[in-house]
Length: 114
Length: 114
Image (tube, rainbow over all chains, first blue to last red; front, side, top):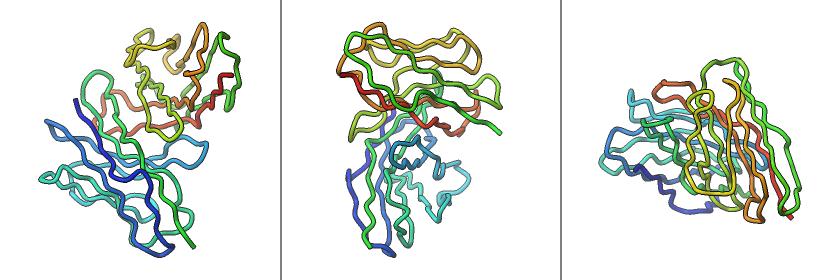
């Protein structure tokens, strides 16, 4: 079975600083990888997804993620944090079996300091 | 465009009472449908998924059940709630059979069992 590990349940950065949220996956086949963001008391919204067309994936709000097969990683970055980026971020992998189940990491809460 | 509706937004129920949460999707046909639960400070746990009317797959043994009486309607139920059923319940859909199709989430129901 596939799995996702997010390193760090909490990450704190200053406004304007680089954001780096780590995600490692385990998969015996080429994975379908996603990053989602969740604001308080809301559902999850898609930030970006890995399509295998390019290893560097660009998403909304200047977020991007790089797929590294050798490291089984799909880390999320943003060059300059904004206060509005404070939220919880989830890395996820989809299994191409059954109902295309999506397995989520435990999430990383991002705090942005003024 | 596609939309997903989930209600109610919040619910407080006593232990032993029944539960019914409803989710409907508009603007698409034959979606895969999912129920997730998010406990405080934890990731998302897949509870049920459905690939068609009347087809329900359960991921974990629990006090809950799901039904799909219509193509775009997904219902989460319980006959007798437990304290441990408290949490944030999220309904989601994705396009049937499309690789890399992301999940689209409703805004969730926060259930408190007292």
